[in-house]
Image 1: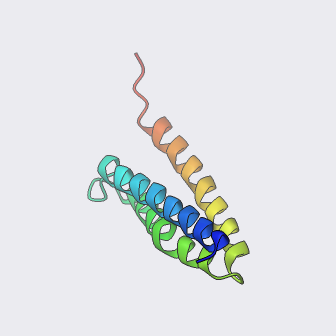
Image 2: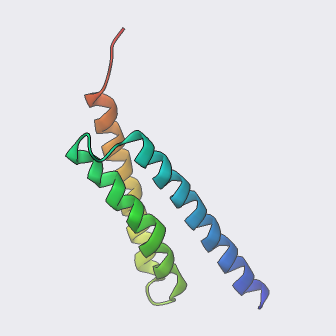
Length: 91
């Protein structure tokens, strides 16, 4: 294994580990059985853990993986802001 391949696999493993940890955290916070809007973090987590790292493995789909990863970030920001505003408890 070359140094470039080793670095690529290490970065990919880091992406999977961070995505999987965040997905598990969101499953704990946003219970699917409580509200149907909680399916958004569930589906986004599956895409981030399985589909995006698989796309990064292929040279032809890597640019699309960057775009899809950015879209997941935007979706996450919007849904977290909505969740915070909907569940705001003033003092």
